[in-house]
Image (cartoon, rainbow, N blue to C red):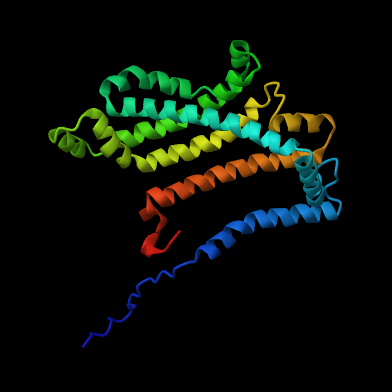
Length: 277
């Protein structure tokens, strides 16, 4: 027989985690954007927001149809995505290489880390005038600005993740005769995977921010060019379209990294009690 609880004490009840469906999670995530959209629509319908301040949702949809119909929006998207993609690939490659070098070798850490940490503190926006002097107003300056912006988040995350790799495991692999490249590929990078994905997420987000800055460098194509044209003619509907496109690009980048996390690290998709996050 189970002894009765002592006076004043309560029998503990184990917490039960109810599994949540993915549809429920997506619905909760959508509440914020839907609320903002409703607020925007109500403000426009009641006259709190006039078209010269911000176009209404219906006017923005008409602008999307107009820009898509005449081919301006697809062309601008293709140009901006190409710039952002090339710059991001360069930044990720440089950041990953430097992070492995400084995190895995003492010589690389002593030679490079202090200089890279100093460069990391320089706002990449301050490099715009210098890049215009060095590279002119062509695509090179825009791509390299994005590359610089995305290099350092990847570098810091990679370097930290590599340093946190279990040194005993590395020494064990060396005792089995594995070379440095094999150890990096088979031990260090898998162990640093959470940090690598965190760096990838930050770099992809910054690639969109840097894209906005890069397309201010006398662009003749891309989303930034559409924005400058719309500003000249006070087209707040097209300005809203461009801002929403930038926001959707950032959201898409975040969703892609989350999907990559689910594939590469499925154990992290389960929260406490085994419930899916």
